[in-house]
Image 1 (cartoon, one colour):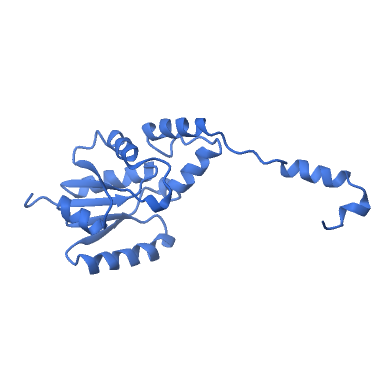
Image 2 (cartoon, one colour):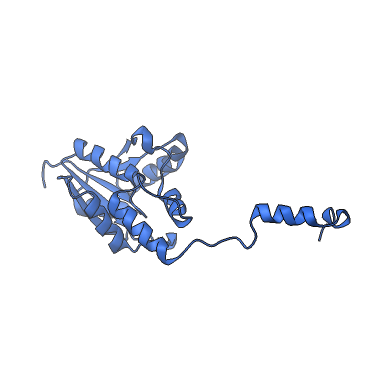
Length: 191
């Protein structure tokens, strides 16, 4: 694909958030072709298998003409080479992301000197958003609406409907009331 500017946007995307979608749209305005590369990441203990993540991202990006979705299980620079990418796209939400992303960019430059890294900032409304936070909200019964594309929202709801959130044995308020009911001689005593 000579003359085609291709950017690869790698990540675990477990799950793909509206922040990821925002960055994909931005990248599609900058590049002729954007490849969202979904990492297997078995060591991360992902909620969704890689095939489901790929399927959800394809559904969420189906209206974006220049976007493709692939999976990979090796070095991201090898994936970039396979898809013909000249640039790796990474998102920066806050200053706290920079140190990690800077280290990764330098390592990837060492592994593939011709692969450039472009850092994109998401829209302000998504700067706090990450996949871990979304999973925690959904796991505890909160609504992921507005945090993820509709297809991802449906899958999260279905996933956590199967496994209801664990309830604490004693709520903090009930524990405090029980302590108040104990005789004064027992209240201050350590067990």
